[in-house]
Every structure is written in C-alpha cells, then in structure tokens.
Image (tube, rainbow, N blue to C red; front, side, top):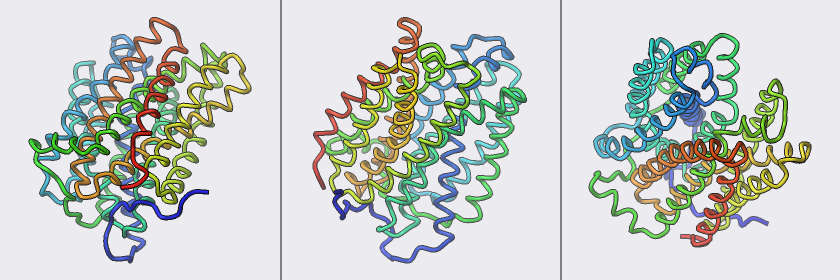
Length: 399
C-alpha cells in the first residue's frame, strides 16, 4: 500500500482554493500543451515540410533539436534577468510570442526563415519552462500542490501523445501550414485564458545566473538532474522514432499508424493523471520516482523483446505511452520536493537539462535509426531508462 503523507511541495499557506485558481492552473496546462506541441510538431510533418521548403527531412528534424537547445540556453539567462518580474506578465508575454511565432511559421517562405522563427520562439519556451511548476504551485494551497503540478504538466504528456498526432492529421488533411495556423489560434486562445484567470504571482526563490551552479552542490537535486538527463535522452531517442518502429519493425500498415498513436495517446493521458494521484499519496521520494522510471524502463525493454509478437507488443506500447507520459510529472515533482526553498532556481536547472536532453535524444535516435534500423532508438531508450533507474535509487526516502 502507498504511504499516505507525501513530502510537501510548498504552495500557498492559506487553505482556500477557488474555482478561478483551478481555472488558472488549467490555463497553465493549456499553455504547456501549446508550447510543447509547437516544439515537437515538425516530427509529425517531416515529409510535407521538407517537400514544400525544398530541404531534406533530416534538416526539418533538426529544427526540433535547435528549438530544444535554444530553450535550454535561454532558460537560465532569462530566469536570472526576469527574477523580480510578476510571473503572470511573463506567461502572457511568452504566449504572445507563440501567437506571432506560429503565425510566422505558417507563412515561412523558406527554410532559413523557419529556423530563425524557431530560434525566437525557442527563447520564449526556455523562459516558460522556468516558471510553470513554481507558478502552478503558488496558485493553490500546499495540500493541492501536487495536483496543480500534475494539471500544469499534463500539457507535456498530452502534447506528445495527442497534440502532435492531431497536428499531423491536420497537416496531412490540409497541408502542414494549416497545422501551424491551428497552433497560432490555440496560442491566442491560451493567451486569453491566462489573461482572464491568472492572478499576479510573485517569483519563488529565484537566484542570479552566477549563483545557479551552486544549486548543484545539493546532492539530491544533483541526482535528480542526472536522472532527468538519462531518462529524457532515452525517452526522446525512442519516441521521436515511434512511427518507423510501428511500421518497419512491428509491421503495422502505415494507414493504421494514426489509430495506434491515438490509442497510445489515450494510454498516455491516463498515465499522466495516474502518476499525479500516485505521487500525491507517496511519501518516499526514492520509491515514487523509481516506480515511474522503472515502469518506462520495463516497457521499453519489453518493446524490444516482443517486437515480433504483434498483439503483445501493441499492449506493451500502451504501457510505454503511460510510462512516458508519467515521467515529466514525476521529475518535476521530485525537483520541487528536493529543493523547496529555491523552486524556480531548481526548476531552471531542471528545464535546461530537460531541453538539452530532448535535443540530444533526437540526435542519438537519428544516428541509431540510420545505422542500425528502426528498433535501435527504442533499444537506446531502454538502456538509458535502466541506467536512470539505477541512479534514482540513490535518492533518499524523504527530505
């Protein structure tokens, strides 16, 4: 049975949480969904974007890596520069950038313009990642903090398992530019929602840029960051190339891929919210994160082992999707638990690591699939996840 008194993730000290507060947290989740879908959308539109812009699919895929790396570099710099600014103002500014950026992407006449626009909105992404978790927690009372974090970061999981496939469907139906027009409209809706429901939020324990490295002297945070680097590198090496895995390795007809991805999306959403409920009930930091990382590691190992057994591997794909969706919730909650007095500084380091790992994972997966076939990225993902699980066991039971 899970233990009942979790290590607190600090929120407001008062116990009153209004409907508007939850609406604000939900708006943050919508923002995370929008920015994450924007980040990974080229994965599902490689062929039409490459054909229209006259470049290779690899160069289109590189825009995902560039986006992630820019966000990683921008996060600590902007976190320091904006450490005294109301988080509501920052959230609104970021979403305004995404409205403009997705519009310009839809209008991009050539590849160079696409890259420039992706760089600019990547900077905004880096800023957003540093404030989402601390802001979601600050909007509610302490006893609702894990739930708020789960809602806010559900956007990451849902974007990966549902947002990108939906955008791919729109792109296939009406052209890749239509997918970005849809993202522009969604960005505008999100901007309005944040403006309506989000109240001013003071910064939470930010540090200047030159003091950020000192945070890594804290052993538990350092271990969590290492786990993040390993598991996210592996997760994105594998998931970026899930479509070739489904078609070329498992042997599913290409026309049925969207149905498989949809089923994985449903499993991912379920995994996301199940992880939130689990984390809220579990006191042990080590056990809670190890359970989630272990689930992902087991699923990836089983995908490799059962790839020739179609009915069985399809079930395992659902488990993989659930574990994949649970990981961001587990990692971010662990970061807040091991660094409760410096939430934004710790989250800045975490988001930098997360985005660097996305870029690295996509690169490693690309090399693996080119050299060893469509199963190779999943194998690398399994190895990274197992290594991450081993490191997770160095976390304490509680802090």
